[in-house]
Image (cartoon, rainbow over all chains, first blue to last red; front, side, top):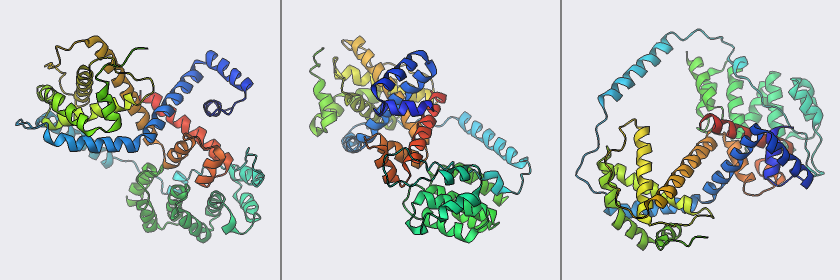
Length: 244
Length: 185
């Protein structure tokens, strides 16, 4: 079992008494597990407290900013930025320019280079009886048999009745099978929604255009990515390669 | 259990947004911090930021359930300001603090211990927060919802994911978080 699955279940209070005792015994024996557990426990406590107190803290900052206006008056000027800093910055810029000048030739199959599909994980341990068993689709997708995966998906029912997650994975299957029109329509719709899959869909939409060699549309799709999109860094690299 | 110091009222003022007492904090204690920062490679603007950040750090520490102020607030505040400015100078690669305006406090050892503990907690909180911000937005949303006490069924419904995917994603996200923290300690 994934150690983080055990740690999360323990912290969430999901383990029965016997499993708890067994996990605690393992913590005492396994220093790496103990370190990961302590770090996650402490991080969770800290981050949760910060999120919970965010409004109160923002209000306190506003109060402090208002109060400080009558204080901290001084005749002294701000310290100057040392010349050494500017010299260091100039050297760094020259080094970066040299790297770009001698940047090696890259292969043109950018789609193959950047295409890294997420793993499908539809199989549920939930007790909710309305969940559909999608293990065949999950297996086929993860084994890269996109024809077989798509065949299962298409039997589930009208596409607009399916979950965003399923429609996202259907679009990825169609992208691999070069059914660009259908894939594009689905990815664009998900990217434009407020779904948690929106940012993934925006990235794969960009890759669809790259695969189709429609670089202008790819650039536009990359420009439309939010700054906190997890693929933003890769998208930036891809954009540079397209433009060169 | 130790009784709180009478200066605990300043802590209460930060937690309760008591404007009158917050004004008193600035009136009584800010000038000395200004002199300290300006004497140690800083500007009036730096001093203002240091003072504000120190009060925010203290309010975060004070919101923990086991916090009690057992020393004069003045000494505690100044030592937190000093420590914060020292770290800022190191970050800017400036010379260390050489001019000390913070002598002459009573009960300094207790204030020092509390200030050190406060600054360590603040550094840890900053590390955890930075790690959280490195995560993608799905991870951040998922962990935020999960850590507010919702079941994974509820979390997966809110995020439009299957239960199985949400669970798997949560384990990946927490692993990423911990890995980042360990490699940036």
